[in-house]
Length: 69
Image (cartoon, rainbow, N blue to C red; front, top):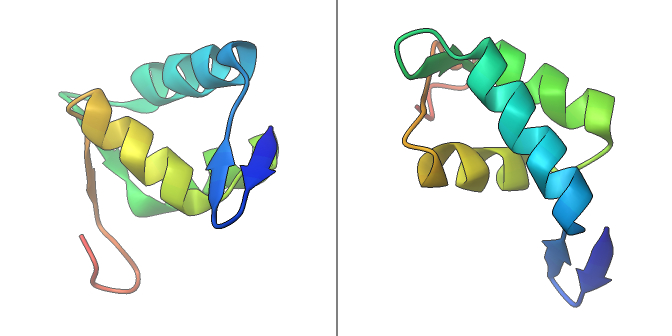
C-alpha cells in the first residue's frame, strides 16, 4: 500500500485480496456496511478504498449505520 498525497494505492496483490474478500462476502451483489468496514479493518486499508472497489465490482453496500448507503 502506498500513500500518494490524499490517495492510497494498493499493490496488485492486496487489491486482488480485497476484491476476493468482497466477492466472497457479497450475497446477490450486496454487502452490509458492517461487513465492508470489517474487511477494511482486517486488511488495514481505508474504508473508502473498500467502497470504491465495491463500486468497481458492482457490489452495493447497504444497511449503513451512518445512513450513507
